[in-house]
Length: 529
Image (spheres, one colour):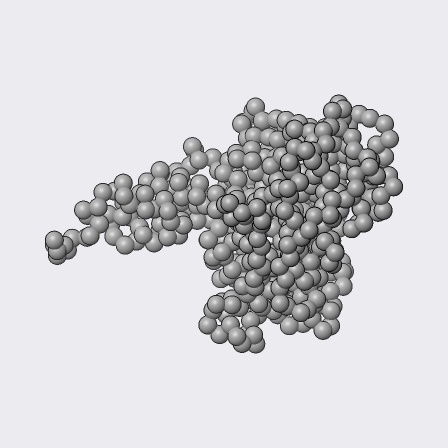
């Protein structure tokens, strides 16, 4: 039947159908659907619709869902939280420019900024991880040997002062520990609505501990999942070079490429010898743990080691002591053949912006590789897509590495990538990693150093019109803050919620005339909730 004049086609479709359609869409698409007519505007302006949209956004981008106090949020707040990644991406693009790294230009204006004295949250001796979602901060204090979890408040609604939810002493009670806090490594993963945290410390005697914690108000506490001690005496260049974690499996590489490695099941307390990640090619610069495969990225290729054949029960070595102990001299390396996928760029790639362990169980993964120009500066970049798959019924694993974008940074500038474990590149987003700008030839100095987000130019993508001409493939930059002295320290950036943490100094906290400014931590929100 023809639709009567002036009557919307949506009138005869039950509202439940539109709600199910909205559940399949990204949050910006739900907003666009609401603009089509009054019926959909009112029908989709429901709390249940935006709770599902928020959960979908968290699932697709590996954002920690407990970061949002859903029960206390209004429909408008749920909508803002679900669309926050897209709003922050557009915000940085609007304020990006070819001169965004200029030390004389202002930083991106935040919606709010909370100043936290380091007497409350001392990050000067801490290894930190800002949990994706921006609300929770995991901190490992090397001086006090304490692991803690902090609540900063929901992004867009920061607490006046961070609240410490839980704390645990990570010291172990045994002899010959050596320098306890040498080479601290902190790895944080998501296990449903729980956080799983791995810590490894030491050099010739290496302690690795795995904890788990849920966000349950006053009942929040760390639970110990497993402890492992590794005797690395006799290993060339001892100390943990790589720590990866996926589920109950922890991969530890000790020493250089001639060293040893183990894969340890922290819950069931068994281990197997680990593979040699160098794989006979260049020593890999970045490592990923995707499902039951290890991935190594080097200057020429992505190498994949399939672990499934090695995880059978007959290959496992049980750990039965109260504090499980492994002597690496007794563990021969397991040389697993690698599946290699090579890229076609014949150039020197000195640095990768690869996702942290938090995102490793996702495929495809997007990786930005920084190139060296003729004068040795990091001023070029290529974005790659890494697909790792195991097809049902097949015992082999496949990998494909393909280039999706190519671009350069503004002339007369050089960049390096600070460690940003909360960073992850997703399809549909143009922003890249946080980079540190050097105005000279990449030399470090105490002068103000801008930290910027870069955006891939539209014509920089391989499938975009005009992509064959690289003359205008220049990334624009958005300055977020500047390194300005001994207390300046980058602590984390969550692009999913628009929150950033960094250390600095604030003269307003000096109570006496001429007193030295006190170190502080800034909790900066670029979006409101």
